[in-house]
Amino acid sequence: MTDDDARTAASELLTLEEAAAVLRTPVATLRYWRHLGVGPDGFRLGHRVVYRREDVDRWVAEQQQAQSPRR
Image (cartoon, rainbow, N blue to C red; front, side, top):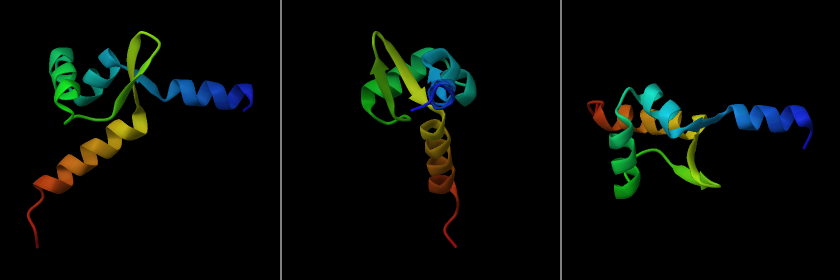
């Protein structure tokens, strides 16, 4: 992995606070969703919980699709 690849991968990681801002939800709600296992996939990186931006975007798309009327 080159330095540019490492920087790109790291820039696509969102902190708990950043993911909550993207989802426009309180941090406590995102923590609760993680506890229940119903929110976007997050993982521990050291002592912090982080989210991949693509996982957050995929989860939002899944929620939208689940709410769309079946035709």
